[in-house]
Amino acid sequence: MTIATGFTSRGGIVLGCDSEETTGSVKIPKEKMTLYSKDVHQGKVRAAIVGAGDAVFCDMISAELWKEITLAEGNIDSILAALKEKLIKIHAKYHKFSEDAVQYEVDALIALSVPDHHPRLFHAQGPAVAEVDDYRCIGYGLELGNYILARMWDFGRTIDQATVVAAYLLQQVKTYVRFCGGKSHIVTMTTDGAVSRVHRLEEAGILGFLAEYEQFVANAMVVLGNAKSNEDDIQMAGAQLVHLLLTYRKEMQESADEKIANLHSVMEQIRKMQK
Image 1 (cartoon, rainbow, N blue to C red):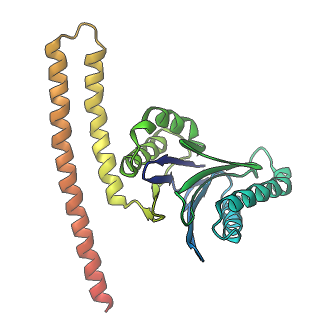
Image 2 (spheres, rainbow, N blue to C red):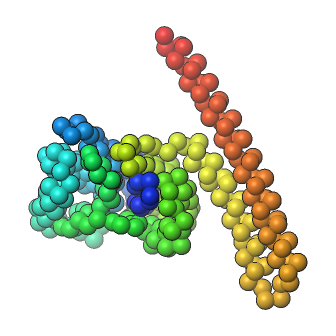
Image 3 (cartoon, one colour):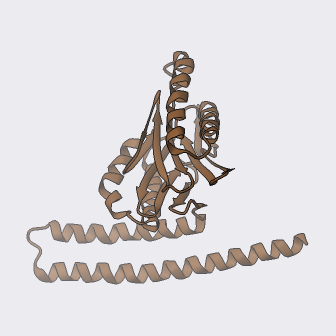
């Protein structure tokens, strides 16, 4: 099963997913997002594609959609037309084999960057494809994912803020939705066409901070929601919230910097050993 999410921001596109496949009672680590890149005469075409559903079917669909994208040679209108035509053919060919246990139905998010255009996010579902202007979740965890994004998407308008929202969403879904799990994979596609994976240390720092942050906010919400709270109660809750947030944020930043420095040191030692 899967949770995958994609959403737009001022700085580009954020795409994220879990990395656990469930087969019967067995959980298997699975890379669900594939990154593609091809040189065309105008520059580079890049795509990140993640699907929900049967793992083998998703891998096949990802490869076939990328093939259609590359044949269009970087023209966004031609790419969209080719994807629509291909999805109709896939639906006609494979949907008839669907059963209760396995649905051979396309459900994929596509982040696409072509030369001289801002990155675009598309949702391919069945025989159809449409551009996503805000956010979209697919897979088994989509209901909780959509609930979180309905509350938080407006606060993730920059690429850095959107990365925080993605990390939090995936962590919550993996914690509370059955069949979603494993490591989180998060990719950013910025307006200059660059595609980057969010480092796991950065993600760990974000989640550690947010776990504490939730406790602080919960206390403030209870105080504010209580009609009998007086001004002193509210000021105290607010002061505690600000103090704890600033203190913990500083500790997390120092811890993250130390971990990254240690990682760089280890990588340098490995490079020296390889010479």
